[in-house]
Image: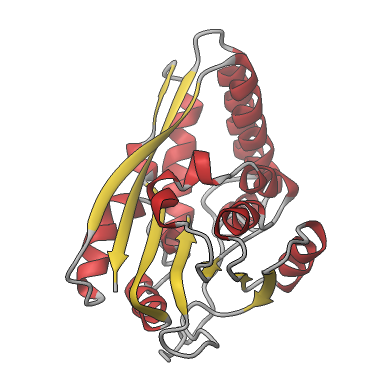
Length: 269
């Protein structure tokens, strides 16, 4: 096992309802298509940073009767996921990605979705994920690249939001543009075989605009991101309110469009 950072990592988003709404939207089809061919019946899977467990549960239905463990550091989130998703072969546990409490070569698949971008030492996390993956299995990671996100129309408040998000994430010793770094991190972690891909979330229908813009309009004033931005002296509460209004303006525009680029890696072990 590897050592955890001296100070625990700070999760930029936290677990506000506006954050969990986006996490609970995720499925294999919209968030793990690159992994789909590996999700075969009977396989054992560790889902690191599982959050509310919606994606984890979808994985479990695809590998049944295999065993799937959803793991997260937040006890309340793990308890809620366990209550909501009751399936044969699926369980949820509290854990630390830097020091996984599992034997070496334990799982066929170790998966982490939108996790590495929040870690101060993603290379050590990848090494530890590789340790618990059995020979012939795979480590699978997918992370957004914030600076590569693009949108229309060019609302100034969204540019300010991007600048602020980058500053808060970096203050937390995290890498908000993780998608472009995944291959380099994997090579540093000792993986010599990589399957690299990318995919995009696109929000452009009236329903999608209302959902995506609405959750960010709320997140920028109510989540841990908002608390940290003020605490770090990077924004005032009136600043955050103005950014929230910008997100509402974007969501209401009939031609609004937003794309999120995600980097992906399959790492054979």
